[in-house]
Amino acid sequence: MALFHVDFYSQALSGQTDFWAVLPNDVPPFMAGENPHYKRAPKVVVLLHGYSGNASDWITGSPIRELAGEYNLAVLTPNGRNSFYVDKESTGEKYAQFVGEELLDYAGRAFGLNVSRENCIIGGFSMGGFGALHTGLMFERYGKVIALSSALIVNGLADMKDNPMANRAYYENVFGDLSRAAETDHNPEVLVKQRIAEGKELPGIFMACGSEDFLIEANNGFDRFLTEQGVRHEYLVTPGIHNWKFWNSCLVPAFDWALS
Image (cartoon, rainbow, N blue to C red; front, side):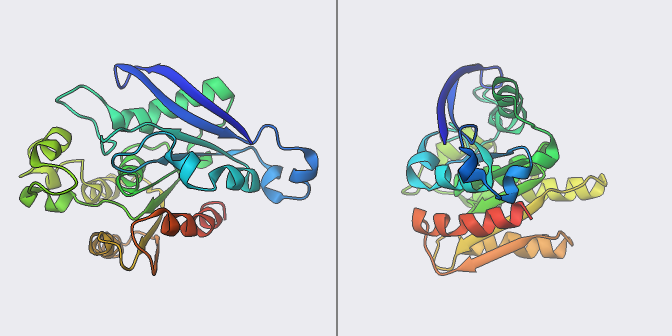
């Protein structure tokens, strides 16, 4: 699999940023063989890292290069820093716009990829799982969302205190006024209701969380919310905690779902 590290100027972020790209453009004919995934153009998959991570996490922590070859995927792994992939008024950095539009458009031009909605998938784990849901619901650029152990913390931000992960000032910098963050479009639940009210098509959603993960109740809650709203989705709960062993165990079922 061809591996590229790209540094470029982002208009949405008002500065330099980077991403990794895994492209199945060097797969020899004997590998493609009768693989049905090579009867089509590569699907574009954007994968978002978690809190304290960076653009290389998916490259070093998962078998994504092998899976990209097996499933004929063009994989993009951007650097989201600790942004939760939302637009931040305090800094002018528009991370939602970056992963929701600009990254696809840039990679489409740079690598000649088909970045139509039906050809694009967004996924992530933890903070990146939240980002995948938020981005997939806010922008009409992704047909499928894969959200693993998602940090669905917005509904609890009003009572957020300093914790081992970050202090209250960090959450305020990211989400603004915490007392009303749950009512804004930072909340995937708000975005779901908006799209339903506007009659807009929702992306397909695949969720997964380990039964021993500290985020299991938040993910269970979002699963219940989607069910109550009549939103079709898949939700996988198996034994596991908040780590790569669990996330990697979800990749094959997630891609099988997304490409079916």
